[in-house]
Length: 259
Length: 177
Image (tube, rainbow over all chains, first blue to last red; front, side, top):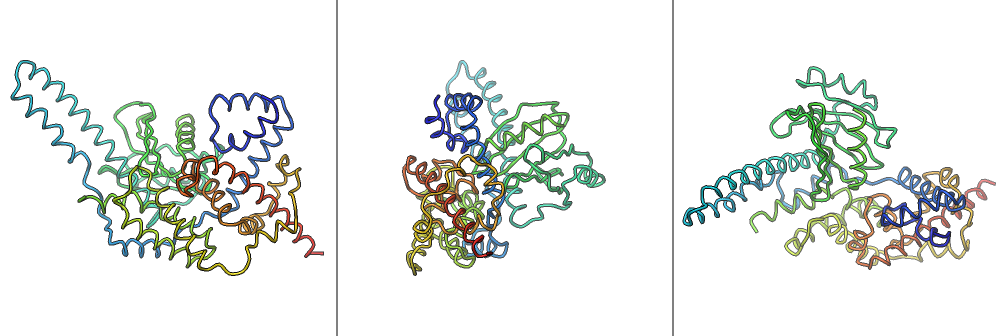
């Protein structure tokens, strides 16, 4: 790659919009070209300056409440999606009962399929609840019951408030400073909620005891919110935020690596 | 559509802050921004059955943007500040393009004023990309422009911002003398 081409791509790359192949080529070029490297640095500096200095304005709680009222929407949550799905599962069973032969065998696999579907539904519900909790924490609060950037202050705060001691770490060095925590209810149980910042955005990390020892990280995206869910060392972790999927994946990876 | 209101709540209400931030930067006034967001949400609510897709944010922000622009057209008084800056100060100092220290030393207040001097089309792409973290394709949806235009507008906006920061910094210095 030559300098002309590289310079056209520097902004795209910093914006996270460059394809992998050209990203690799550009990175190689920058290693060998001081001029382009300086430009790449200046672009990063500009990004940082914009993100740290320019305010991301937030609607006042009064205005948000007024807006909700004017739309006539209630705080009631949606009917769980699993309830709507049930008839779809029952229909083939009714149909198969009339057929014969392989019915028993198929019924077994249907049963397994149904179970798996239900577990999946459970996971969806926890994520849906977490999204509600995340939005509520930002708009109505309290976002934090303990405000501290020190993990050694936040962790002891949970003692006596929860029947488990959540692993609390600060990821300021990775660009995700810890800012506090609170107790929360999720899926019918008490969970720890840790609050982190990423630029102007908030990340809620929910932690509760797990029966599975470890599971890989699962990503999902719903209504513009990204979630990352994983289990490790006897805990479930669910991170949620409106930051980009890449940022949240980075957060999950850093948290997994450090605790 | 028995679940429509609930779905609207789940798809649109989480983005009140994003809507407000865009309106606030476009209209530069708290009350105007609140009025625009209120208006946009009512429109979104009425038009919700036309919404297809999963990303409520870009769709909602597109409505917010349209409301803000008609507001700006109504309020338009006096010339745009941007033309003044450009006429008075030509091309930006090219060294800033390779000088990270320039941005590290730029004060926040100066940066805010500089962004305010850009015309809304340029201001909004910077706000949407740098502050809201929208991908190019989402900005294309919000501003109703092709992807290529998003890229060129963003590039132009950055140049203009740099020019404005320079111009304001110079002016501040000469005022101090």
